[in-house]
Length: 97
Image 1 (cartoon, helix red, strand yellow):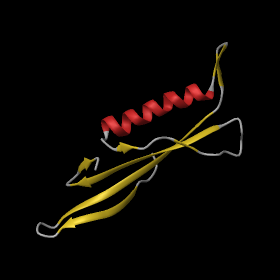
Image 2 (image 1 turned 90 degrees about the horizontal axis):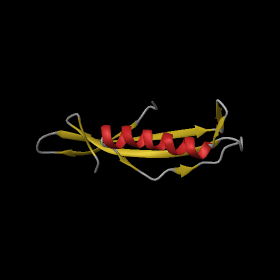
Image 3 (image 1 turned 135 degrees about the vertical axis):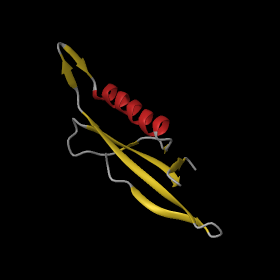
Image 4 (image 1 turned 90 degrees about the vertical axis):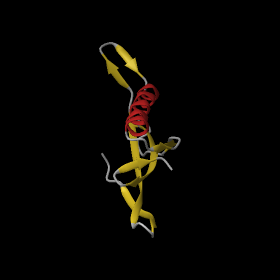
């Protein structure tokens, strides 16, 4: 799991409660694979990994996910993309906005 960047977002002056903005950037890499005699395209692998990442960050941790961004890679046989997830933490509770 990558190390998140945490920034103090705002503070309610009357109560002294702090709210922190937290952001994760997840990078996914995939290549074509052969399982047994069946070939699996890297695009299929990327889609399955995206679904798993969104499931964890959006459904379990309640972060707001952005659209995946395709990133260039030096090896043309490797697909690469990044997804950013954002949220706010206040009193150990994660809020989407």
